[in-house]
Amino acid sequence: MFYKSLQRLISLLVLAFIFTSTQAIAQDTAVPQVKLETSMGDIIIDLNPEKAPISVKNFLRYVNEGFYDGTIFHRVIPNFMIQGGGFTQDMVKKKVHAPIKNEADNGLRNRIGTIAMARTADPHSATAQFFINVSQNSFLDFRDKTPRAWGYAVFGKVSSGMKVVNKI
Image 1 (cartoon, rainbow, N blue to C red):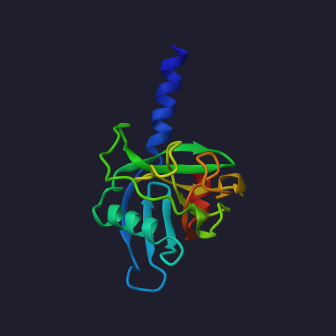
Image 2: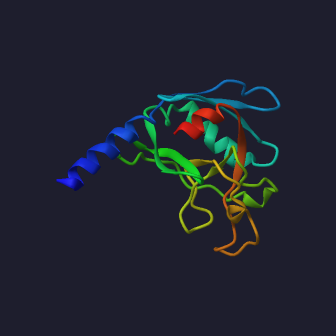
């Protein structure tokens, strides 16, 4: 009984963090922006194509395809990060494109408000999932090109909507 109640509560909480849509709002400028429209409010992200061209191109590809529409922040860890971009409201994993090269050695750091590519233990396994840091997560930064120290590629920063990020 307790397990079913907990499962229902988690399902309700997860539904509160749905991406209703994503859209590129300033793709042709020096700093491309993406607006994540969530059920909790909007988040504007400034992308950094100069330092993370592969990650930015990959992210914008998914945005322009409407891939993130209807997805959720499925992994929310207080004082760490919020992760989304891979699952529907029903926790169905979405089909993704091929993985991209890890750009964590670009000099950008996992600081509060930055967005980075999520991945598996394989440093070059990032596809569509991303996370937004809600803490200074320097342990996620690039240290060297070994599997355990590759880090997570930062490719942008929240320019508006950190209150929404923290609410999630």
